Image (cartoon, rainbow, N blue to C red; front, side):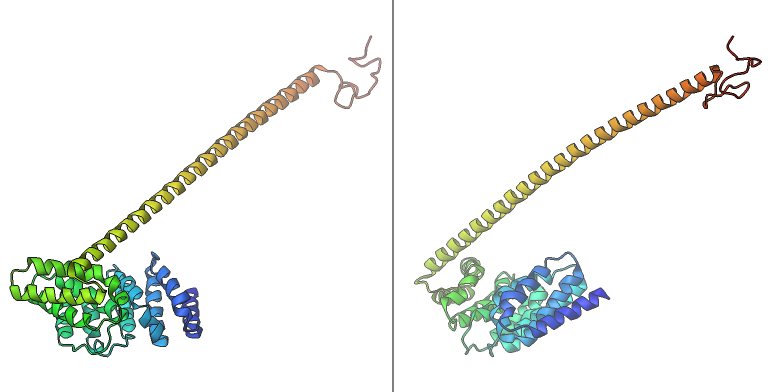
Length: 329
């Protein structure tokens, strides 16, 4: 079928593509396909993302900060086929991460991303992990969503475990730029734990994690980190509001243009209908005139002594005999 041919074509293109095409061409196209309303398109895009992870693991590993949020959003799709493909794609992509410390916990972390009630199990596995290798943006993109969710857990012990993992992880962060995108995700939640939890031991763990994360972010103090994160968050919100306003303005402009076009089409349609009506009236009038003329000729023919050929209707000659009834006297 056409669908099978299309799938084979996509598979062949990805298999033949150069590694440098993954971030520049393949992933943007696959991300765009995930916005399709057709579930088969989403499923195929997720399957091909798994294929990219197998063929080009290094490029996919670098793109994990972009891939994880996009694929995670598909985990909650109403179609079970899309959900299954999203989980498999997320697992394949996360396995491209080169951090050996996190590798054993990746299945549990992916399971926690797909099923929030398994967050505590993933956090326990991460808590048992000894961080030795450098933690880069790729590793942070896998761990931070689960740790952020764990900090919101009702159980104080789970919050403490998350704080310990964040502290250990933050001490080995590669650069401040690597952890900067995840600051707004962790700093506010750590601040809430440090201020609101009633157990002093857990508050201390939160403060220690906040201090280590502050250092990783490149700030001199916790207050500076919080201020910076809040400023970044405010700027992000303002940028998002501007984007939404621009989209609304563009949508309003499109609707206005569509309305004007529709009005113009309606006007042209009314003019065409009016012209057609006038033509119908003229045609009807012409037909009536033709009928009246034919009737008049028929009446005249009845009253005339001559036929249409000019012959007499009595004797049949053009010039009547003297004996013809209609002969002129």
